[in-house]
Length: 217
Image 1 (spheres, rainbow, N blue to C red):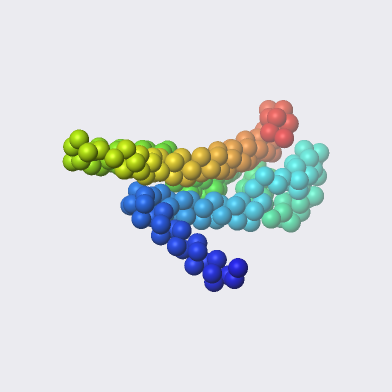
Image 2 (cartoon, rainbow, N blue to C red):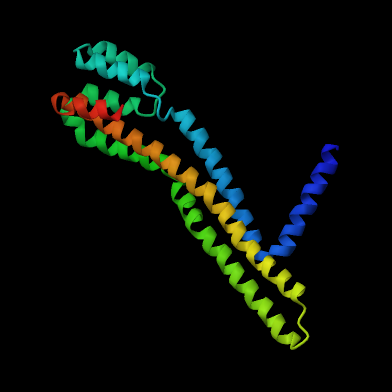
């Protein structure tokens, strides 16, 4: 099968689904496309910022703990991690820069969390949107049953019911992977937040935070 015929078949199937499910399925399909684009962007953003990759940062922290400030500074400057500038500021400025480093760190995490709220909203709303479509479809099915009077065709009623249930299935199909990906991405950000907080405390208050960094590992 050629690529053009495969594309034509895919578009025909999509049109059939949209014609059967109506605007509710179209809305869920749009949400799924936007969610997929958001996840792809977040993965690219996390990879570019080197989220979760702390090997060089740990070397710098160990060097700073041993009093080798020059080595720690060189390691942080060579690092491509988004946390490196904040740790470098803490290393060079000391306790006087604590509040600023904490604020800059939170700003970085707020940037990483951009888009996660949308994924959470889709995960919560998609089943409700699907259920709404099912309720509307059931109302239409029973309206048709009422109009038919005594001459009711069970196959027509069954057809209306399965079409109505299609929107609930579509809502769950969108919500489940989005919820899973949102939970995973949020967990990655949270682990980096714990690491960053422990790393800053190790630089600014090393005696207090040594065990925190071990737990963040």
